[in-house]
Amino acid sequence: MAIAGAVLRPWPLTARRATRCAAVDAAGRLLDRPVVIAYDAPRSYTGDPVVEIATHGGTIVPTSIVAALVAAGARPATPGEFTRRAVLNGRMDLAQAEAIGDLIDARSAAMQRSALNQLDGGLSRRVHALREALVALEALLAYDIDFPEEDDGPIPPERVATAAEQAAHLLESLMDAGAAGELVREGAIAVIAGAPNVGKSSLFNALLGRARALVTDQPGTTRDAIEAVIEPAGAPAPIRLVDTAGLRESSDAVERLGIEVSLTYLGAAHAVLACGETGAGVADAIARVRPHTTAPIIGVRTKCDLTNSDLTNSDLTNSDFTNSDFTPESERDRDGIPAAVPLAAVPLPAVPLVSVSAESGAGLSELADTLVAAIGRQHPALDVPVVLRARHHHALTRAAHELASFRTTWAAQTIPTIVAAVHVRSAIAALDEIVGVIGIDDVLDRVFREFCVGK
Ligand SMILES: Nc1nc2c(ncn2[C@@H]2O[C@H](COP(=O)(O)OP(=O)(O)OP(=O)(O)O)[C@@H](O)[C@H]2O)c(=O)[nH]1
Ligand SMILES: [Mg+2]
Image 1: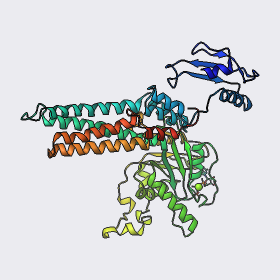
Image 2: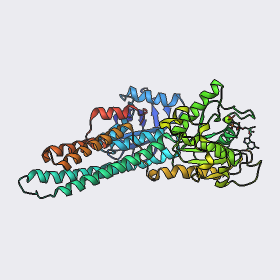
Image 3: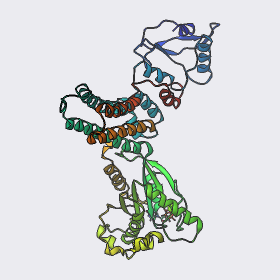
Image 4: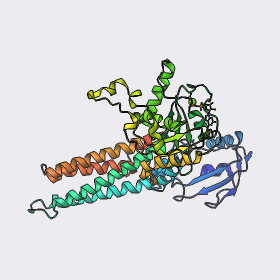
């Protein structure tokens, strides 16, 4: 406060009220007329007294004011120092502090939403609920330890087992919500696949709203996978749309490499758009991608401006393409059972079908809706995604491991309660690390190292 008083006139100020001040250097020269807000402890971001100076901006003005403050005895903050102080002063817990980092780093609206949820205590509340369940379990055990001589003990062992099971369920659901959060952070992968020249890159560009991928009438134009992020309305997570090289047998080495990349993407996909120009073409694309993905497949009939019939699932069985055309040799003969089955002989599970035209824009919004629904169905927990950092994940895994060990030993009744209880204590300690109940310095260091300066 004394430092601010050396640079700002008038001083002191009424707390939490914006005041136009003069900022001066040590010689009393005017540097700027900034708007200043002073916060008194503990009602500030950090919990300490804080002064916020909003200058007119630019380069020289803020730099000269910072120089004047440093000359008066201030020092620049280290990365994340303000938030670190907020944690140490009990203004927020560690998981909320990380949410501030996530909010600043958010690259998508979905990430922004989930960071705000975490900042509101979403993760902390769930960790606390879990911690309470474990502490309750520990209390039951303490009772048992205190009255070891009683024949059955005052607590029936099944009651302990049930309490442990309930805690395990809570832990599991938190880790599931974490898997959904991971999708929000990393984005869902939607792969556009199909034979060469069916209009995959055109569809990619049309969904993206700009000409990102090359389009020509030459089959084999796209040689490598191209990614771009889209966020259609209602998307639970950003969608990483991937345009791929057309799937076909090829003797061209570069094209074959491109096809390998397509297959790798299919393996990681959360949804696949199997494209073809006709019913048979779509069936062909579905058959080609199916062995390489477990993700939901959406059949996409492209260039619908050129034809006008609607596509139904029954049109898809008209193909005489067989899986064997695309099954790798090694898989085909595994166990001596040929994996190749004529497509027509296999009833195709109904896939959603959409007809689109990159040319006219027809069907594009229906396709986006279908894609959003396919991704949303896989992660119902996405309504409350929890972004788990590696640190959280590690702690939850440790807690899960300890709890599982406890449940096993409890069921077997092989070791004394007092020893089994150590597992429960360790599980609680692991959770404490997430919210920072215990202010372990190296945990704090790790968290705040990644912060930007000024937060
Ligand atoms: N009329 C019409 N033509 C289209 C449409 N989409 C693509 N085309 C044309 O089809 C040809 C191939 O389009 P691409 O988007 O390059 O096809 P691709 O599937 O990416 O092809 P490869 O990268 O070679 O596998 C181009 O000449 C496009 O102009 C469409 O919706 N309507
Ligand atoms: Mg292409």
